[in-house]
Length: 502
Image (cartoon, rainbow, N blue to C red; front, side, top):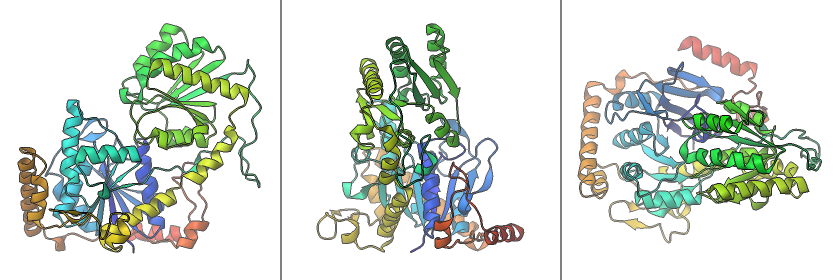
């Protein structure tokens, strides 16, 4: 059954990152499966209004003030008129939000529930329970997920974290991992012959240079401080090792100072920010990928590194141990000494020829697929829309799924205002009352808009011409970054007609 879906998040292209790539790839695959998908995000420098991406993916860049790390300033209710206009114009049935720290996501889910739309939330992050920032974030998440139809997490560790943070029924949370387009992350010398693998690499000698690659946002939670402390020790212990570091962030100055102090300009190359389509070209220059993150729900970049034929050294935190099999990774504690030791073990293993990195690409290709992610996400949409029965959707929950006093069966969310207020009231002694007040105001604003800005005045947008599924399967990507596809002359003609009539 085809759906009209709105992906909503503060995090989307042109900003690079795992959430951004996840939204784009998932949307593209859902479009290939016959659904209509749009993306709602905030305006970026040079990108405002409506943009079309490959495959007919329409992106609404709404003009809101950005305050920190590309997240918008909380507006609560001022976003509702614009959101309602977009949803009615595009005839949206399901609103799918991404990111615990995305204000657009939280507000969009609140407004969607007020409008009587089904909602899904995908969590891509891990948060603690003790510091002030985590407490406030968890309370905001509790507010949003109290009235969401279903939640998706990218790893089992992420699911446990989200269930605890938002006090959810575990049946309401599915685990659907990220994926990669393996064809966009091929190692050097990869052959398309019958063996389908990269050429076998010669064993590295004691005098051969080993390149360690780091591609990350340079923030505290990504372990940049550990990286700054570990690099001088690794360089001192291994004379024939060099680093290539790509990324940007507030910790970039610390890396530059470390290089100056240690006079390591000839052994540490800082590339600065790079585009996603350039990631593969940087990775294939290396032998080892170092990922010293302090917290990570999944870690898509380490899958990309393994697909490029790099041996991965990473910290054993969050959902990282679930991502790759043991023969592709060398794990370390999130401590300076252990990262230095793990990197040394990885260097020794490569020099001894104990790691067959040329086999990694095909193994990753078999493990991760965006088509599989789209199929599993589509099953979630079927479950919340009633296409699947409760017994089919919530397998293993007993006859008909778990019951709750205010929810009914797990996953069945009533749109009745009184039922919504019951769910929000249970979020805390003071927070519950505040949440109920927000919902009531949101509902009154919705009634006001329905009266003074009736739906009949909103033009319905024309849908992008549907492509035949067989044609989609046969068409090969035209660019290595996955953002371009060959178009048939018929498709180009339909595109011109659509633009001329709109």
